[in-house]
Length: 115
Length: 116
Image (tube, rainbow over all chains, first blue to last red):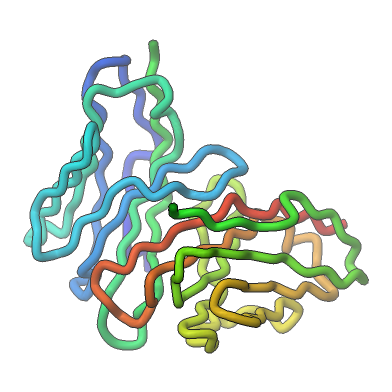
């Protein structure tokens, strides 16, 4: 049962344009959502997060939007740069119960930004 | 500073060897994690330590043995591994891992393990 889904395995964008990466979740207990960026053979790098009490969080070129009713979040990168090319993982956690400390990851989306 | 360090960067071992992976953080985090990642897959949680006590073991085979000597260090002892255990092993840490809503995990660079 995949509780966090990234339905687009890959995304190709022109430099300077907007990249939009999407993530859906099924577990209504999730209350904290994170985006990580990963280069091959390296550990994931934390990018940005959002708690369920918000619907938007912005940090420089990165903005995350959360739609709780649709159980959907998205990461917007604008403007996109070639150095943004990497695998992007959406992750979610639930603060209550026995699941605390567990991050559930999506399958990842490979973003390629062309010069 | 959000640095988590891991040693070694690469490790090759035979199925009869005993080796250890090490992880260190100096951010004052009280929760530390081990993940395993196969190529083209997301990280899979193995163990969680919260305040130096094992709080989650995701049914990991006993050939993997975690140890948390103190709040800054996390080890993963390996013994009698199988070739299918070859993967990138990631360590992460977070502020408390005790259920706070905004507990962000920060990852190390990983150890690339190859079992022959």
